[in-house]
Amino acid sequence: MVDTLRILIGCETSGVMRRAFAARGHDVWSCDLLPAEDRSNRHIVGDVRDHLADGWDLLIVAHPPCTRLCNSGVRWLHEPPPGRTRDEMWSELDEGAALFAACWQAPVPRIAVENPVMHRHARERLPADLPRPQIVQPWWFGEQAFKATGFYLRGLPQLTATHRLTPPRPGTEEHKRWSAVHRAPPGPDRWKFRSRTFEGVAEACADQWGGWAAEEAVA
Image 1 (tube, rainbow, N blue to C red):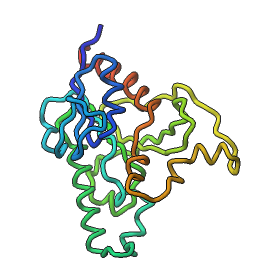
Image 2: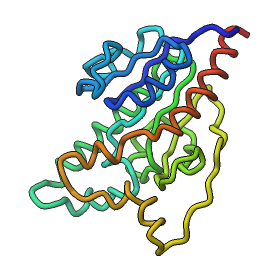
Image 3: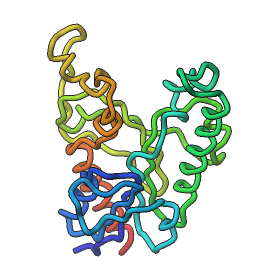
Image 4: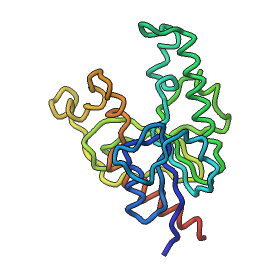
């Protein structure tokens, strides 16, 4: 029997990742500036950076702010959206990169930070040892959905697909349903829907990273 791990899930309000690890007996907490949607008493309301040195065995930063870091948002650095300025865009880039770097360099032996593939301006602001991310899809884990998710890993193995589905053909109604994340309409809760972890992905993380890391910890 392996020991349980002390795990921090940063930048998560849904509790999906936290619950997956908790179901396997780990001592796990989530942390975000917002309260937990499930009102769990194992959620810390605050800046994750204030809790990185609290003796964790595993850190998973589920949804750090990435709008200014990812390739899809690089255009706003040069042509800001209505009502915003270039200075604001670049300031948000610096803030996002600082948060990502703090999490990546946390005093934790095993780290996974979720983020899309980044543009060069973001990479220039991040640690030189940052590896290329592993890109996974929800349909690798039994979820009928498209959402390319990048995990930057330190001290952890890459995820292995557990229930790989066959994606539908482009142009079909089923393909449109699978693309719901990308096709989400504008609105105040769009960010919440787009950032939510799929259950199948969380289950794979808990099984593969939780079990592997616990075995390593007692080896």
